[in-house]
Amino acid sequence: MSIALSADGTTLALGSADEDCLATGVNPPGCTDDRESDTSAGAVSVFVREGTTWTQQGYLKASNTGAGDWFGLRVALSGDGNALAVSAIYEAGAGRGTGSRQDDDTAPESGAVYFFTRSDGAWKQEAYIKASNADEFDQFGGALAMSRDGRTMVAGARGEDSAAAGNQADNSLDESGAVYVFTR
Image 1 (cartoon, helix red, strand yellow):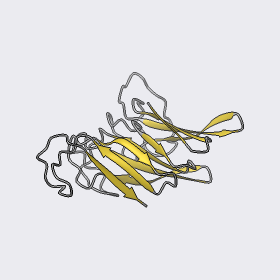
Image 2 (cartoon, helix red, strand yellow):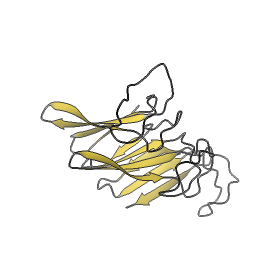
Image 3 (spheres, helix red, strand yellow):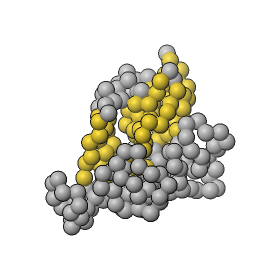
Image 4 (cartoon, rainbow, N blue to C red):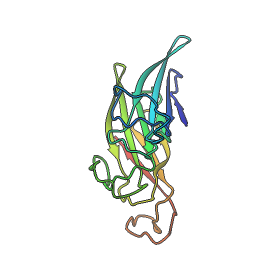
């Protein structure tokens, strides 16, 4: 479970990486946490506070939900709560960079980060993000942070094997780790 709170204390994101519904998208119909299936696809619930009352505003799933992805392992909110980053470190997409293909699951545990925005109380996935040099077992998104204005996001990949600064192709140092910075 992971938790992020907006700076003004009115938006709360709760990541549940072990959640079992295999639906996709924002507020998908028919999702009940079927504890018998044990898929660990993951989900994020977003709550908002008005006065002293908290209500659920959104139920977020990955656009390419998969069993064992652990979507929601890490969450990060902008200061105003209108931008949200969610990691899925066991996601297996083989794409690289922002907006890559989501239907090629040949890179186990490469990891992904999903970027959501809120407008007029409605959540929308804006981006599917992979490391620029994504490889299997990198676990991209194992650490996650966002700037107060929501314009900069940082994601860590503890399994990245790069041995040299600036040379992403050099994978000669097992699990040395890496940090990736994204701006919008």
